[in-house]
Image (cartoon, rainbow, N blue to C red):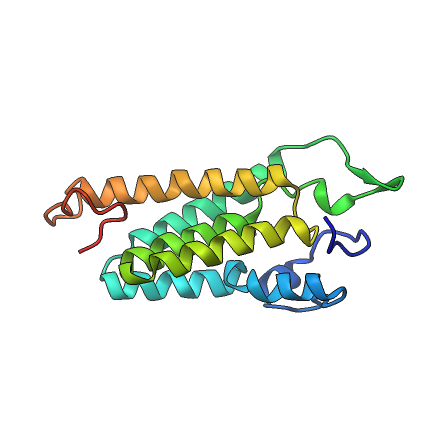
Length: 183
């Protein structure tokens, strides 16, 4: 975690909801991580997923976002992990950081936007890769936190695509072959 700042406490509710509220831009690597991961922030990610849902004319991605974020919150408050220490200091912020909500929401944003605008898939994939790498390098999350967030997003995304293709929405299923249900 070469860009990590000194350990702090977990973010407050206001810091979780308001983009960049009390964000630290020092060292510079942490500042870059703050900006690159901004689309994975709670409000910003919801607005991006809602935009994709509006374009697709269906709310399945909003439902996936809501369900996945709900599961993330349950996991964070129901599970405990052994305390992590750096230089003898207990890193309290990591006590309830699994799974990474930023990684989770970033991956759902990418899946929803890639479904709505398939031509952006490569750029979205590059951004997601940069975001998840920076989450760890900046010390926002451990690798297991990021992996947990990506795993939960994969489950939510796969469930959404399967539901959309099932025909339960009263529409014809999407053509097979498009990984994210492109039309």
